[in-house]
Amino acid sequence: MLSQYESKMTKALDSLASEFSSIRAGRANPHILDKLRVDYYGTPTPFQQVANITVPEARTLMIQPWESSLIKEIEKAIMCSDLGVTPNNDGKCVIINFPELTEDRRKELAKDIKKKGEAAKVVIRNIRRDANDALKKMNKASEISDDELKTNEDKVQKLTDKYVADIDKAIDEKTKEIMTV
Image (tube, rainbow, N blue to C red; front, side, top):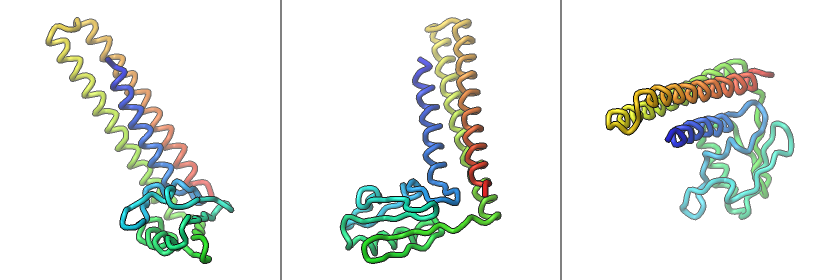
């Protein structure tokens, strides 16, 4: 009964982790391109499906499209994004150089990380509310006793506490990564 709510909480934590992976920490990470789409014959397509993405140096991403005609589209997608970088091309591949993050940008990213973490905590608390509501309905319908209700509500609270602590840990780790020069 509680396993479905635990899996929802796990999904919320996984979603937060994937959001954090798209936040750049001053070094090149291919995952920052995950949310971007390139126009491939009129269809918005993920970068990973049209090109090979490598990290030749700590602050450089190299995108080698499988079709050279895509270079202009890839550059356009990067320019239109909120990455704040300018792509270059050498005719065969697109190269993105990431500048060192400024102190202000680091603080801005840290605030963004905290905001996303708080949103994930709200999701966890909503799942807790849903679980408790379901338990109360079962109790009202005499499917479970008052003791079982109390025991299960305690289990839900322990699950909630565990996932909120995991989110806090993820926020701290990502903030530390961002603030490290």
